[in-house]
Length: 120
Image 1 (cartoon, rainbow, N blue to C red):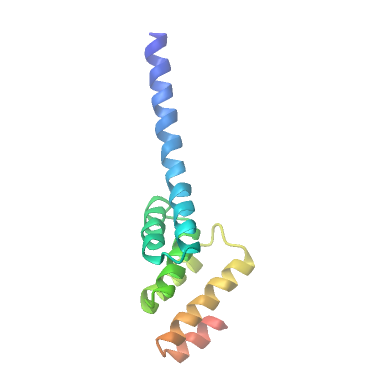
Image 2: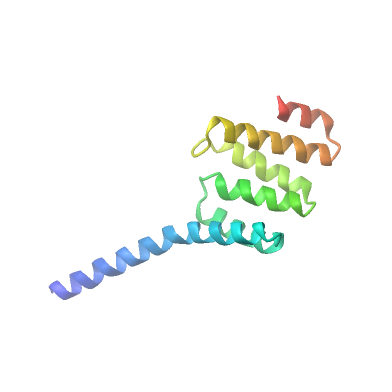
């Protein structure tokens, strides 16, 4: 009986730690790809991280950056707005940077009023 309980505990522990490491692992892989200007690969890793961490802003923000680098300004702006609306995990300066990036994405789309609003 003790062996069965030990195996169950081990199974639950390994499963839980595997799920939490997935998000971090995807973020790290995305960061490495981004640093090598491999934006399509980074995009996929950040999408995977965002799917795992549905409340955190970091993966969504990084996804916005990779989309912006690929010229996908509309989706990049949407991702930046999504990241900015997630209050947990963003400091004041990070939130300001996020809204600044929303403004940049709007400028690229020639949506000047929206860009000014984001910058404010």
